Amino acid sequence: MATETNKNQILKPLQFAPYIMASSLILCTIIASWTYYRAQSLSDALSVTGSVRTGVVSDTVKWKGVFSRTVKLSGLKAGYAKMESDLFQVKVFLKAKVVKDLEIDISPVFMDQVYDYNQSSGTEREYTLSQNIEINSKDVTRITEVAKNVQQLIERGVIFSTGGIEYSYSKLSELRVSLLEDAIRDAQARASKIAEASGKKIGSLRSASSGVVQVLSKNSNEINDYGSYDMSKIEKDIMLTVKASFALR
Image (cartoon, rainbow, N blue to C red; front, top):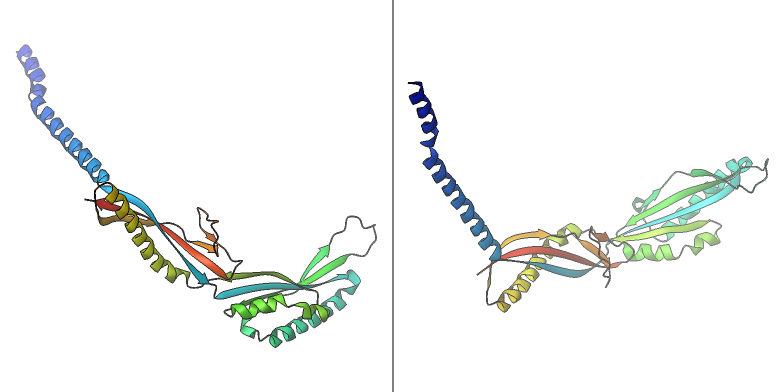
């Protein structure tokens, strides 16, 4: 009796063997079919890169300047008085150049100690007093001319220097949309030519991904993988690339 029971226990799992094998064959068939379909899908697609480039003129300018005085410790009070007088002269100068008050940002007076390691001990310490001026304007041409002609301040005794001038384009986000459309059209034209060479035609767009926007100085090719934004020139080139995949038929 025990022997019969053991025999049944051995044979019972074997009863399911055909079902297990059949299930395995079905699963393998499904995997093989899906792999074949995937391979066919990939072979029936063409990926290309399209690009577009257009010129713009900067519509915003930022100009930075600074004026300063170097005074001894005992002359700090007089130094601050001179700084106040210099600021008055700077305001008069900017007003004469028709720079609006809303375009001007004036920092507080900064004080830094002058370190001279060659000074002998007991020499009175010196300090540099400085004040920053920043101009933000839509009138690019006018502010550029003002920044180039600060010699009038020098002639009035103001120790003024231009820290830098930056040009930017404020409508970049809106322009990017139209550039993306043009870049996809360029990709479509390239894909069409490639497909024709192999005796095929392109179908619908399957996927598209935009690259970074490159803001370059006019006629420059100094692109960067992470994008670039030139702020040194008024005239700029905006460049955009897109990677697109099209169905083949």
